[in-house]
Image 1 (spheres, helix red, strand yellow):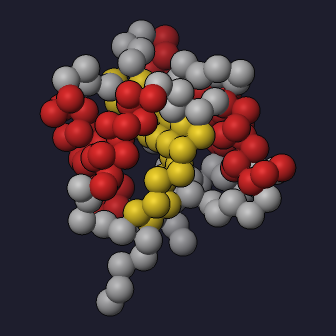
Image 2 (image 1 turned 135 degrees about the vertical axis):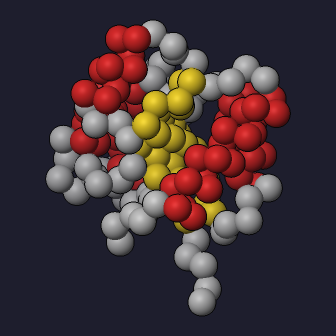
Length: 143
């Protein structure tokens, strides 16, 4: 049985974190496509297939930073989970924020999990690979 290509939307404005995430997924055993958008407005346009994203595919998983330019990640999460066409896409909040109110608000807006980004390079790679392993090897996602 051939493995399906997994599409992951990374919503991240920090070029260093984008690079680390790319590296972690490039070492993956799964076939994956990492789509990168760098602000909340671009994320919304991608997910709604607007403008230059009219031919976008629907991702299998969204990795969402909270602190984004133009449109905050908290608003993006709320938009995703209030949209009947998008709400079943798992959203992993992957952020530097350790604030209790961000954790609570993310879960109140139906984030599937909340992970604080490790500062350490090796730990960051490990976290990204664990996310991938969990969501695509253990969990059964809707088609």
